[in-house]
Image (cartoon, rainbow, N blue to C red; front, side, top):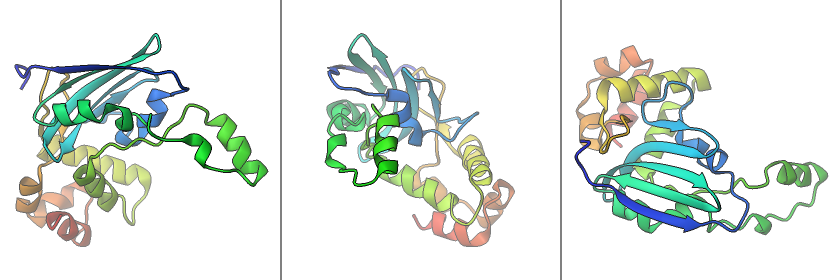
Length: 190
């Protein structure tokens, strides 16, 4: 899918923003086939209401530059400010406790991002039920690697299985991924 043209956006960022930490919830950890992140460079792929998207965000010189590919690229680019947490108001949380105040200072620049990746988030949280974080991460990585598809664009990322593909999977397809029958049935009905 690398022949798809990119949509580009650039936002001036005049507030404290720790891009990598803000976007960290999109990543499954080391070896994630759907995301790669550093503090200033974020690459990820997921499903949007408009279709799949793969994107790269770079934080440089007071800007966040975005390149996005796929049917969901325009949607992501149009909502870039909320996607990277610029519509979040960190001052809205009033700290009435010393521990909370200390965590606020330590988390300066961390924002609440609105990814719009509802389907991928639901799949992620179902897989993470009743198991350890490491086990769930491994199951998600294997699900994306074995049953996902190449993401649009040149980044070499993978998307998780689309809703129809997930619904068509048999329980026997989930078992080797460490996903037992109960979670498999819930996933198939997403």
